[in-house]
Image (cartoon, rainbow, N blue to C red):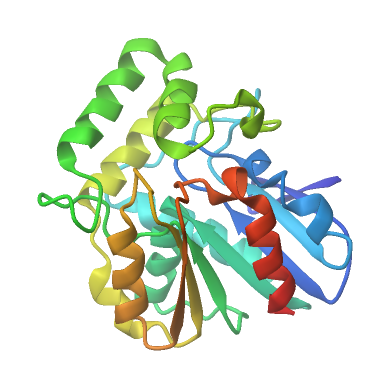
Length: 260
């Protein structure tokens, strides 16, 4: 695996080929959540995993808050995708990173991609009815637990809400969490952001993959994304959790191998 820096972000490359998969993680995840997928997929493709929020010792905390948050990280995503524009790029947006992609759509940025994948994705995180997004009361619990016992709380919450398996090995080589302030800024962003209106502006095909038993972003959100995006398809993984790449990597591999 080769480590490079693009847009001040650590990017990890494996494999080679005309096709490039770029995997963007979500809230508490980092590039290692894709470790069950990448080695096999990298046999015939270039795979890039990204440390979007600075998880490693010595990396600075991003000082970006409030209204600037979405624009800041969508710019990172844009610059990383453009860096690989010489190949056929397929970006995969998991969880929170799907919102950051929608920020690029809203700002009318032109990306060198013909299609994309939304994995356990959302265009709106909070929903008072708890039907299409995470309920505000649960978000407040997240924030309270983080402040009380960070960083142990991150792994506790990850294990409780994000994966279906009880096996710690399913976290793979998962290590390194963002700075606490960054995690809290991400939660603030999630709580106030609603980009459902942007879905109609997506001009490329989007494949939506969602777990039937996702406890973080309900499956109804995946269905709604597929309904609102003009060129879309929907794959619902039975009994799937929020972190499908950890729980059912073989199913995702079968899907990605069909992509090319």
